[in-house]
Image (cartoon, rainbow, N blue to C red; front, side):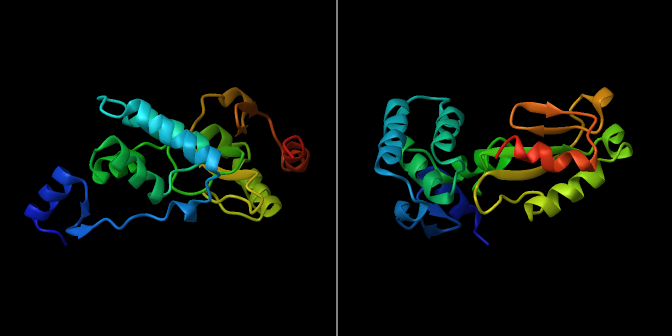
Length: 184
């Protein structure tokens, strides 16, 4: 556990985490193409020295790779000259950011009351079986990420599954294979 003095030092310099120096991160481990790396560097450079740009930079960085691993967070912190702890706290606070690889399509199964009563749990079970993943996981082919979510405000269409920007309602377990085929 870091002392208060170490925590203050971390926040001031951004070069330490709980009193330990941040090692140079091997960005090669993240598997960015040269083009993606140049795009990331351009985004950081365009925003360097400006206030209030962190969320926008992180959003653009996540669009490049699909998620924000630690190596990218460190690169952003260093590039914007802000503490890593600030970058990490933003990434871990906002649900729009992910530190794990995500699929091309995010499947969100509504588990609000109306959807639950009308069979959302059975649909979720079928999706888990078809995709061979649990909520919060991504398929090996990086096509789908499965999530559960609270009410999506479409109770009249219960049960509802959202895939990307598309809402699918009044689903049955039998609809799941055809639904997935639309996105493959």
